[in-house]
Amino acid sequence: MSTPREQFLAGERHDDILIFLHEAAVGAPDALASVAESVNDGVVLVLPGEQGSETFERAVGIDPMDFAGQAMDTEGDVDRDCTGGTCPAGEGPDHRVKFIFAFSEAQNEDVGGLYAEGDVVHAYAACDCGTTYSDKWVVDA
Image 1 (tube, one colour):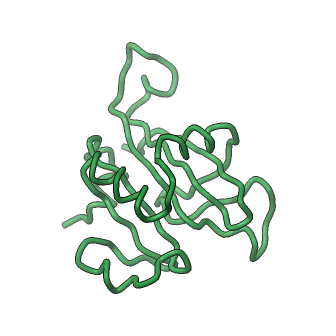
Image 2: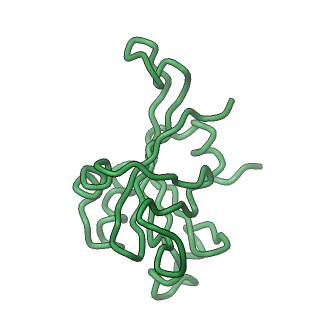
């Protein structure tokens, strides 16, 4: 049986939001055990759209659409498992992903481009250094 994160990354949960929170950004990670998947450096939640957006805003204090709009200005590399990334501003201990907000869209041949190739994941990341960046990719079939 696959996890909600695996289902999301496979393009099976277009109505849901994925949130990654680094362990340093979560005061009590154990409190999320019943609703989150523990990963190496934090937790991942996959929640229904509106609930996911509200949870993201409560957890990080930023409206998710404002965050996405800001992060969209800088292209970067978000790990395909949505648990990290490579900050475009640099490397090292000050360049660790604090949180990720992601959603997916179903393949849409009418739109063309990337969207004609398959389902697309949009991911927006915030780094410890303050840089925000975005990435998007076609779901592997």
